[in-house]
Image (cartoon, rainbow, N blue to C red; front, side, top):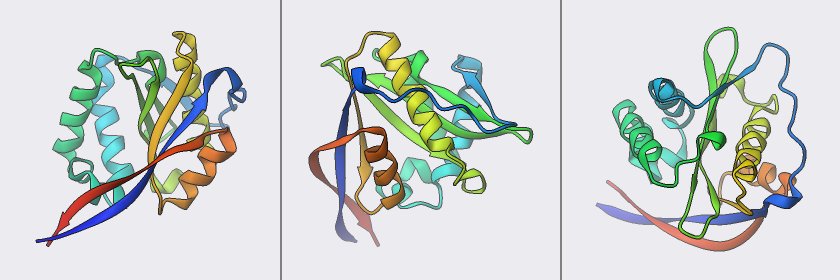
Length: 177
């Protein structure tokens, strides 16, 4: 077994300085959180992450049942924020997901923002991120936070464009072998 370390950044944004919501491209639509949508969130999460580095860092993201367990855990947390939890759909099905929780300090934390590979490059990630952040603001949270793998250049670019700033560098151990 070999242990390696992956660099991750914690990034934060002041929710009073959010850009406005982004209109979705034609043919896409929002689906608000409802417990009946848990399985859909889990399936989309798996499709978004199973072939990505994050599935090596967080093995549950690389397994359908792991994504199911993760969604049950997130949605049953005391700080779960339904207003910051969304699915994004199109004529074929669901193509994006994001969940939001508040930590003990009252900061809204983005969880597992993802767009399926075939729908990327259309601004959907930015739309999901802003929809979730505005959901945090709607329940009077003042700060938003997320963690991102330093190698994920596309995500880092998006987060900086929205207004996130790096607040901490973390290292996550992963076992490979």
